[in-house]
Every structure is written in structure tokens, then in C-alpha cells.
Figure 1 (cartoon, rainbow, N blue to C red):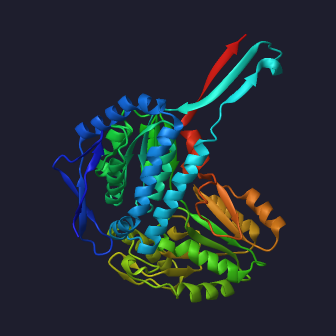
Figure 2: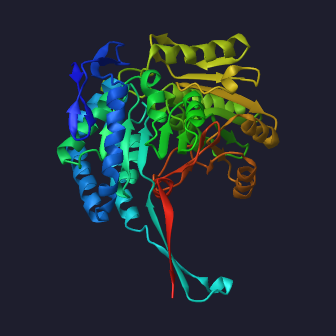
Figure 3: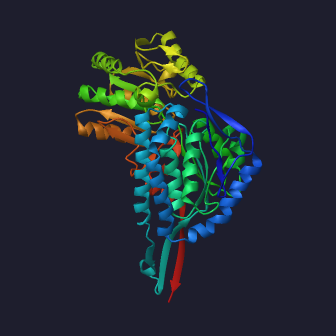
Length: 472
């Protein structure tokens, strides 16, 4: 299949005659192509969303909701096609692709309900001994949102930026990741069929290195919402001065396994948390910090469960699938090689064919090894044996990534005490690290991000207060 899709700019599906090939991780061959847009098209997209924003915001909430509901219905009726595109474009299993679309539809539904609860706040001056004064403070759209999504959740993490922005009256320029562009443009095609007003929702494509700065520096932008690498996120921080930023970046999420943990439960959660989608998730468990007195038992249990994971094609719904490209596979292999060269113990895995790596488990990892600190974004899990809880906390906090962590213990008091010591966005107790449910706030600090996501929090991030003070 050679899929060709157009960009959506100001109510028209367009291309400029220049194309960007999308390479499938399944076979490292072209699967389709998308427009490689230039400065002219980018500027037209931003002029369009700025021009249309006030009229879009003046529609009633229920009028804006009706467009999103129609889009959600089309996503539902085309979820099989979207899942197939995701399988070829980003290597997601057909089953997981359909689940992602269904989750995204639920996200739109919940966003609509949350938007109905964005009420004005009314205050009086009595608290300051001021008479005859009432203030009404409403949330209003900030204006133009630039939404940049990653490859790993090309539907869900796009909808998570787009739907809350549109429903409250912002207009959006959406730039999907290179691998993810076909999915993004298929969603754009469905939005075109809905008939969103001209310029309300524009979708542009091209390599980030070619058009990224053009996007971020555009003066029409009020808010940038980005999910992706730390390097690009930090670059956006530098260029995006004066714009409101929400950045979802990397993770090195630790699991702390205490000596009293339910190991059967811990193993089940660790394997799911570490190896789902071959570990290509910011919230994947990426290091195990375990009490040395139970480490050997935990490792043997993990070896059994990891060994059950089938390796193969996402078209066959295998658990371990190719990582996104050869460069990513080389990086993961480099972390494995460094650890083994420094006397870590290979428990399982370390087999590779092109960008398909087997599920790999490595014991006796130490802080001198790159694998202890760097985010692999691949199917490899390091085991770090610790003398006590204090050492676990120290190693967990030493990382510059501070997205999530999880703790396994039967002592709820200990869990709360440890959670309070961990420097991270979220701590999960007796469950794996993960995003969601989507109604929960989602956040990272330091190298893991800036700002807060989640449906209500995203609505807050793309709106501002506007006050009306009445003197009588």
C-alpha cells in the first residue's frame, strides 16, 4: 500500500508538490507520503487560524461541541482504517490501534462534558470591606494553539491537545510527528468531511528539522503544546519565549520493590509497564530498584514472564514489535552493550534483527552504566539491587527525569512516606506507571516536562481569566 494524503489548510486539502516519504518500521520501506510544506504554506496556516479565531469563539459552546461530536463519530466509523495506518506507520498492533481510537473518542466525550462545567466565578468586595462591587471572572480562549504530537500515540495524544483547545474557542495548527503524519492527515481528512469552519483547524506536515522553527517562532501563536524528546522540548523553551508552553517530555520511571511486596502482582505490573509497545512510552517502567534480599527471586519471576512475550509484527498483534526506526534500535543496542561491557548480567534477550529487538532483561545494573540513567525507548529493563529503601529513594531522585514512579509494598504507611520523598510528577502505589485515566492530571517536572495535562488541566492551560467588575 502506498498511501498519499494532503494537508488541511483553511478549509482545503492541499499539497505543494513536494513530498515526504514515511518509512514503515515493519519493513523499513516507504508506506506512504505526506506534503513537505514550506514557509509559504506554514504562514498561510497561521494567518488562517488567527483570522477565524474570534468568529469561532463567538459560536455558542454547543455549536462548537456539535463539530467535535461529528468528528468523533467519523473517528469511530473509521477506527479500523486508522488502526491499519498506525500499524504500518508507527508499528502499533492492530488491537492496540483500535483501543487508542476508542480511548480518543472517549476523550472527546469527556472533554465536551468538562467544557460544560467551565463556569464563571462571581466575587464581591465584602472580604476587603469594599461595598457595592461585584466581580465576574470567566475563562476565555487564549487564541491560537500550536499542537505538536509524538509518534507513539498519534491519535490519542493529538486529540488530547486538539479537542480541549477547540471546544473552548481556540483555533489550532496541528503538526503531527513525521511517523504519525499519515495518521494525522487521515484525521484531518475526517475533520474536512465534518466541515469545520475555514481556518479553525489546520494540519501541516514536514520534517521537524525543516519546519519546526518556522512553526514555533510564528508570531500568531499564543500557546504551544508539545509532546516529544527532551532535546526538542528544550529547544522550544528557548524559542518560545513569550508564549505559554505545555511540554510533555521524557521519563526514566522507576519501580521500587520493597522486601514485603506481593511479587506476583509486582511482576505482572512491571512486565506490562516496561514492555508494552516495546517500551516506547514516556510512562514506561524503565528501571527496577529492588531490595537486594528479594532481588534474585524477583529476577527469576520476571524472566519467566518476560520470556512469554511474543516477538513479531504488529499486524499479528505481537507484544514486542519493531521500534520506530533503525536509529532508535541502534541507541537501545548501545545502552545494552555498554551495560554488558561493564559487567551487568544478561538475564534474557539481546537478540536483534534490524529494528526488531527482543524483550531484554538485565540484572546487576549499576550507576556507572548508561542504562541506569538514559531513557531507552525500547524493550530493555535494568534491575538495580539496593541495600535499603533509602538507597532506592536516592537513586530514584538522582535522575533528571521526574515523570512518574511506582512502589510495591504491603505497608501503606511506608508507601505514603516514600511517595512523599520521591521527586516526581506522580507516584503509583501497587500499580505500574501509566498515563490516565485521562481525567487525571498528568505532569512531569525537570527534564520530564512543564505544565499539566489531563482534560480539565488542558482546558485551563488554553484559557485565561477575564474579569468584569460591576460598581453599583
